[in-house]
Length: 246
Image (cartoon, rainbow, N blue to C red):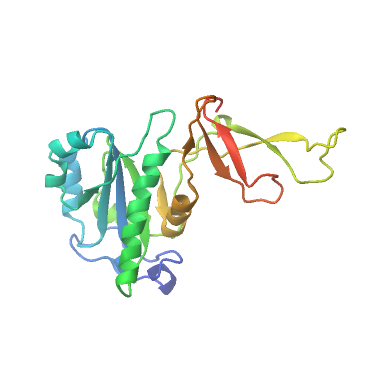
């Protein structure tokens, strides 16, 4: 198996990877997958995960875990069975309100680990960050998962149907979009909605960590979060989205 130079330095796709290399054979470029587990009190299907990671070449993966009940996770024997996994600081989270903050915590720790590798010396390879849940079941061999994810340089998202995309109201900068009282007209756009379990490349992982500002929780209003608006047509650089309404 071989790869091009762009793929090896993480700036582009890794090409010509055999999807089923020999077990234990180090794969091209020395790329690393970061498995980021969002758990409540334990990892389901540990036998399958153990078998999955047994065939992974040394250095090809690393793991971080966020637990809502960290003592329960420790008591489950998870970190004895998987010593390569590391527990991150537990942050506030609530299903159907905010599971993004713990994801950001996981990605932050993984990015710090990959940046430390880069600072330690020359590193040829790509980094990918996989957000997975406690009930995720690995059904393909590690070699297949590795080759598929490292087979391109982009992030992977599973988009939901457009009917589920939340609407966001905004005021534009276009001088022609002014009402009779001299105020910017309020219009709406849609935010693309996708599954919370994604695969990020290094560039997108860094952008996520740098831009996620957390959920705004105030006594006099419903929780909301800020979304960076990277377009001059929007009047504000950050859009506040109410979680209850969306």
